Length: 336
Image 1 (cartoon, one colour):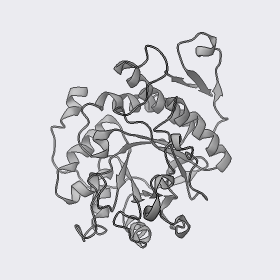
Image 2 (spheres, one colour; image 1 turned 135 degrees about the horizontal axis):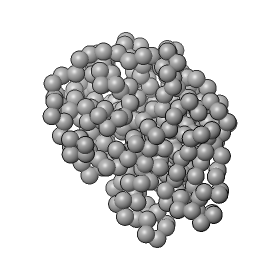
Image 3 (cartoon, helix red, strand yellow; image 1 turned 30 degrees about the vertical axis):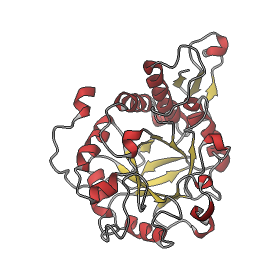
Image 4 (cartoon, rainbow, N blue to C red; image 1 turned 135 degrees about the vertical axis):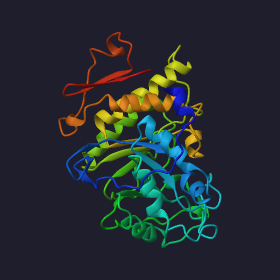
């Protein structure tokens, strides 16, 4: 299977179709027919810009869909941020958003848009509203995330967060603050429809991305979505002797998918190949493991009581796992 995913052979154009509309249900998302959703998202910052440039991004989309992702996190306007594009370069930027969303929908994937990168990145105060109007023209639901890592912006690049309000008819977030090492994993406030947290520089991130974010979801009474975890290329040492092998690292990504699906509304797989929106090669095993973990959870447990920590099964009792969490009859086994 993994070799087949390195190069997708069928690159014929996807047949346009729409996906069921999404809505918020308590701390989670669901389709309008009641189908419960865990948003297993692939970070693909550069994809829309490359697609507008005429690159064969359907090939990349098909790989993501074949692995099992059901959403993609895509950048919008920027002048110097991966391969995102500017309005000057592509005046048709807003007009073609429904076409791009339909291409992804035809493969079973929703699109989450990062609206603002920074005030120095092709900034336009009307961009938020224009993205909202473009999202409303799509036959498939979109997510709008106002700003990425707002607390990491400085000087003239700081965006005034008070200007943003929820756009009716579109599922919106105020965006994210910086990585956990800055002490600002707590999201920008007040929340809109859902909130975002980043755990990409943190010890025991594979545990915190599900369990710690779930605590905020219960407090906010809103869906929590971890929109960035460490990329395999930049993950910090585990802190546990013998657990910094490639196999142990892949196991942590499986744990992150499983723990997040057990406790929160969504989690985004992050890697350098994804940020540049190229085919996964070095990160392929990690992506597959992440999805395997997420798919191991039966989402019937979403509305039940919070997960419990099974101390009797984890390392505190001599077990091999960093943590074991249980919710009804479903378990998340968190690797060291």
